[in-house]
Amino acid sequence: MAQRALAAPDVLAAEERAAQAREARQHRTEHLLQGALFVAIVGGWEASARTGLADPFFFGQPSAIVATIWRWATRGTPQGPLWQHIAVTLEETVLAFAIGVAVGVVAGFALGRNRTLAAVFGPYVRMGNAIPRVILGSIFVIWLGLGMASKVALGVTLTFFIVFFNAFQGVREVDPNLVNNARVLGASPRQLSFDVMLPSALGWITSSLHTSFGFALVGAVVGEFLGATQGLGYLVAAAQGAFNANGVFAAMVILSAVALLADTLVTRLEQRLAPWRPAQRKGF
Amino acid sequence: MAVDGGSRLDHGTPAIALERVTKRFRTPGGSVYTAVRDLTLTVARGEFCAIVGPTGSGKSTTLSLISGLEAPSSGRVSVLGEPVAGVTRRAGYMFQTDAIFPWKNVLDNVATGPLYRGVRREEARRRARAWIARVGLAGFEDRYPYQLSGGMRKRVALAQSLINEPEILLMDEPFSALDVQTRTLMENELLDLWSQTSASVVFVTHDLEEAISLADRVVVFTAAPATLKRTYRIDLPRPRNVAEIRFDPRFTRLYEQVWGDLRAEVMIAYERTSRGTVA
Ligand SMILES: Nc1ncnc2c1ncn2[C@@H]1O[C@H](COP(=O)(O)OP(=O)(O)OP(=O)(O)O)[C@@H](O)[C@H]1O
Ligand SMILES: [Mg+2]
Picture 1 (cartoon, rainbow over the protein chains, first blue to last red):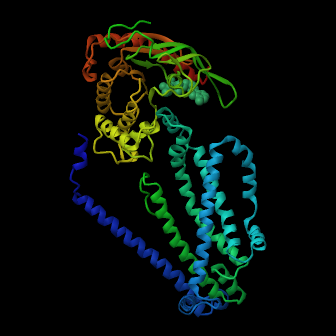
Picture 2: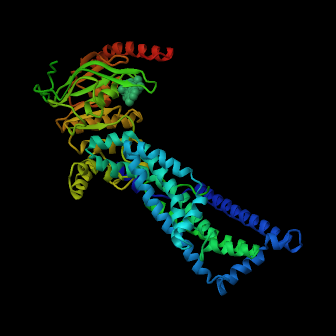
Picture 3: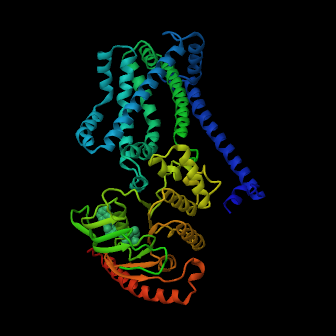
């Protein structure tokens, strides 16, 4: 009875094929409009720079930004090879992300599972989260120097709280029915933690990964901006010091590209972690 | 309370005994709400006992008292002669709402119980496959719950409970969300599976027809707080076919009797809620 449904032939009717074709056309139009919007904005910017409507010295110029990126990529930046800066920033970001997520998950899970821990540490965690982190960045530079450590520390303080609150909430919001079911089926407290609470909180945790990766990157860049000898944030600071608007924009474009790429990787990671969730519709 | 007739009924220690059990809850407002009051109920070994009662009368609460998920405020609960302290290992429980694990596929969901009880993974999976086939889900082992229909999810829950070979099976409106055809099918399958075991069943339902066609005994609960209003012996012959037994004249007679009792309680519960007063 059940198997027949599985074996049923899957042939699309003519209307369904037509609907698919309509869908594809719709997609093409959307992409075309997306492209048109980009051309309009960048073209407008370039045109106003060339006609002198917006002074390229202050506002930059798309063609010059592209030229700067090309120069940096092929002949290196005034501060050394471009790839080295990208690698440093990425390394700081990934380190901060990994440490922040690991500590955040463990702490959030422990506090979510244990009432006493939550009561004792809860207020301090909230206070810690209220500290303005950019100022903390300056202190980290004083404490840990201009190297990587100060940037990683700043990134960790940013990512930790996001992941912590999500893991904590995730454990708190576990469906009590699932917990009861597991208990009746014979789960020990340990099995309850790792076989029910953790997978159930994983949805909350993974949904925080995007945001926290973004914040790890912000931590690295802001840290470099505040004081460093390497990294994309340092490039921005250097270009700013030289009144080079195109340089600032160029660093920004590279940063965005890196962030987008990383975001795709995090999405992959997310799907690996939760294959049991219905595939989400693409889009916003 | 002697329940004779069915040859499979055992007259020794009852499977379930509730003695003057009361359960009070603290409401968020700080007051105390009595969900079950002075309930005395025994279920014999191998008996199929159905509980009907108005909504909010404390049926689910009674099941969680039997399972040990909740402790009574006063009174005694024992299962197979042992007082219940903490979750009993001898019960299976199908919850009122879906409680299979959404992150496990069908095979792992069904294998959960044996794994928790220390069976090796290979062996647990082997047993799970057999149970999946028995509830008619062969071929769906690697589907996740979101890929199943409501009826299939109920089958998974049933296999998940039965694989532990519970001596008592608690079922809280297990089929109420299903369409009539699927429900009849599942009721027959349940009777079939149950007849192969010696388990006692406590089956909560709103559907009096379902209660009478499945059970050896129908227990009517009063409007909240729950106490036992009356119990009815259902002496219809077994094996039964749920789809046909409804046309038996004895079925109709029983239905009218029980319905008379139940209607009175449902009216009381309804009037209370419509006046917005809570006992
Ligand atoms: N944990 C709890 N805290 C406070 N009140 C509770 C709790 N659990 C149940 N109750 C109350 O006890 C009463 C009985 O609930 P119960 O779920 O047992 O009813 P029921 O007979 O199963 O109803 P239904 O047929 O609608 O499922 C309800 O009024 C409910 O509000
Ligand atoms: Mg209920």
